[in-house]
Length: 108
Length: 252
Image (tube, rainbow over all chains, first blue to last red; front, side, top):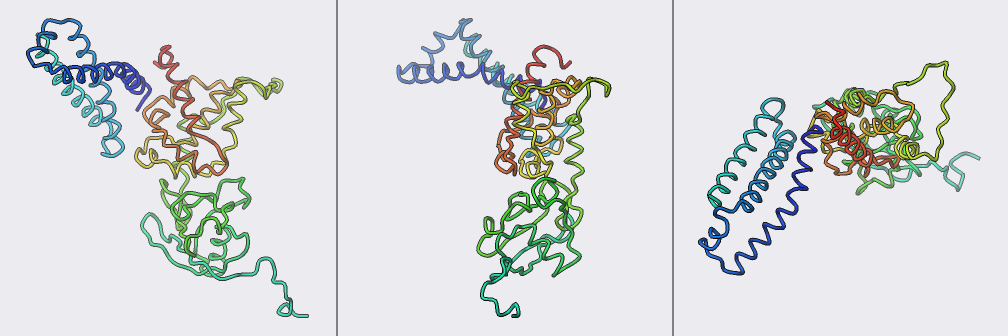
């Protein structure tokens, strides 16, 4: 891991700490209040705030997870060079597409 | 009066024997068992020396000073890397047995002698050589022991290059590009040396893939360092320094 990946992974971790706490609070709130899917969509559809919250979360998680997986593949999987970076990008992009697709589904 | 008549045994008299398994061969090989007399204040290096002098002269191992200064005699003792000249047998023996192998994470030349080349090559990669900022004609620069930089250096400077941290490090085992604790610790002392002129290149070198950011902070280096250094703390210092340089755009 070079300094660029290190900084990106630390920065996304910092960014995700409040987002994760908020996400957990939202889960507890939604389940304890017994919100239905319709209630939740009523709040999220068309909401720029929720779209931004989860879009940032998905981007940060994709970057953070891909860099972490790269380290695991390097050290425990023996992958190096181009294959290693391709695996990182592929995993990050899959996370990003799946995550943004989910965000799109609940806000649009 | 003959020696047999004395009631007091000489200080180095044997009291029982110890079963010693010693690695024979190169990267492929096997452990061979010897029985060595146990003596008071015996070190692991004493055992190895006894085997070579009295039981098998073909045993290969490395040592020089015998007093914990030169860093030549590190081996794997009962699974842990140690400086054998300062490791008392009584402290490490388990059920009357002791297993001695070459240092891990390095190629084996023969038996207990590990090839230290990769260890010192990493030292070069981390720009571990002092880069003078003045000529030999200049006066010796006075460095106050009270300065912050000098105190940081003092905490990390007494490395004897024994390779124990390199052998103890998980990241070295998993990632052959990783420079390792000793080389990065050395880089950290030079980064804080106000006389050094090579820090742009040094900070750049340790910010690359095999540099300080590969460290997982497992702290095995600190746990095993025979002279009580904390390379993990030095590596953390390098992480901060390189991160600052990166954010300021000094690394591109």
